[in-house]
Length: 323
Image (cartoon, rainbow, N blue to C red; front, top):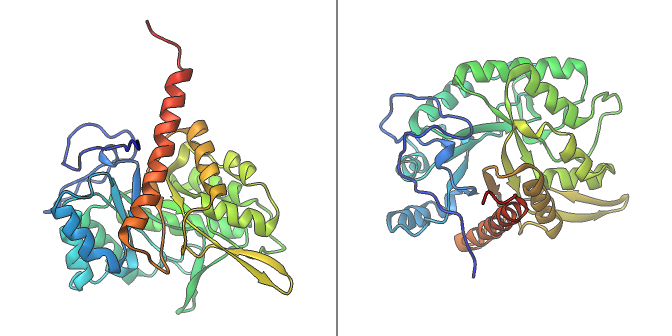
């Protein structure tokens, strides 16, 4: 029999165990991470109607939270945004951005930042995150999350931009480690050290994507375990799990972070090891392309929940008796 973690979605006033949502005047309930069940899934346009219906019927109680791509909801009058307002009244939401371009030499675009702040005020997300990457330069936007050279100069620019965003939001931003397919020859700082230094300088938090670690480790020939153990794990406030694709090229095999299939056995193993060593964090199942039915995502979420229950059971078994 499968056991799943469950907490109520109703608003509480107890002190949260992790980050606290910034209090703002809004009609939406103010959720905090203490109320977030461990496991969430990405909310995509194709699932909006189903999610609304099932929430209304109390048919998603095993699910703790939902994560959106922020840029899809910046227009408050869009049909998706109006639907999101109703969903956000019933379940915690996390905003995951792909457009701040924090690694660009230019500062974050004021209009984009203004719209992100307005989105935060509308739906009161429990977390807001973006990537260790860049995606625009000189007014030209690229439809990808491009890698940074890991240098002191790039570190200064990235930290400046994180500070700008955090000051505008009035809260800590989570920064996600990227998947990557090339490295700059003049990079002088390992990626995990770069992330740790961004956290140390800005007070940001970290979003650890275990699939990205796994994919990049294969592509660049480093150890996933060494990477995870080198990240400042006390700064990690969220975990991402996803699927990837193996592609054969004339030059050899490359792994691509496609988010179009179930989480791999290897990434599940990394997650189990994380839980044993570092404990529970809010965890997201990502699936963005070749989108399956909602129940497929919920089945992946239940796998993560099972691993959490197993980890908690093992922890209790190892604890000395107080009797």
